[in-house]
Image (cartoon, rainbow, N blue to C red; front, side, top):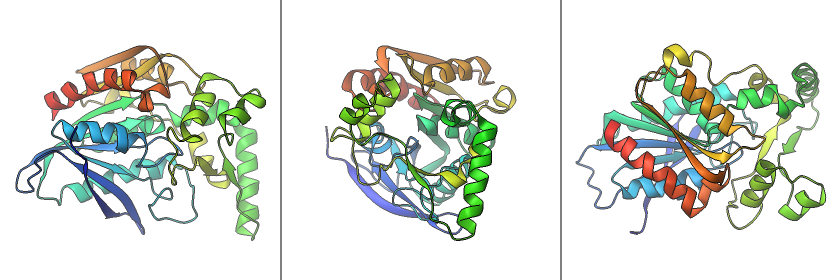
Length: 311
């Protein structure tokens, strides 16, 4: 495989910059118009992990320009305070990235697609419904973060969690130290020692907390006081009417606590898209699809023809 041709760029958002890596295809010529894919990272991740170094790189080799970006308030992107995980802001990031792309001479603005991985799968669904500059959407082990926050991520007590978030935000407004939660154990061994062996939680720890996937900006941290919006948010609200673009959904068939299999099947059933495909990678789990060669190859064997057809 050819060496990646990557450019680091800054994209103007509301009052800060979004950091992004552009992966160019072999033989790139900026006088030519290219189909372009926006690749969005999982919750707690960064552009140097699966969205960029795995899927971004592979899709660029197939002739696409791919842009992998860090969410606002995370990674190398700007925004204060740090580690905000707010679905409305994550969804808006896509439009800022598109605003940048449509000013580039090599981007065909009629052939812009999106790839959302894990939590960005849900964000990309929500963005695509109202961002009509997106021509095709694919998700890999996509999860509805709003559902998770309404359910297991708040201990199935959303009202209690909201009350705690409100109290913490008031305290911080009055000068208290910010509460930034680490979302994962420090190592796979610590997870096992604590009995945290559920397939998705242990898989996340094995990916993010070892050399397998660890990157400096893949911090898996969240500002507790700013999580309330997510508790009342739903990535799939109105997909029956508004999600009409071609859709490819890739999930593993080993379900875990983060619910990507459940969400993928629900999205496939509900989406208004007339051209939609559900790909089930048999024998693989959520985090296998991040970087393991065989399940990634299964995903790409569907993603590449999907994008070539619709972009």
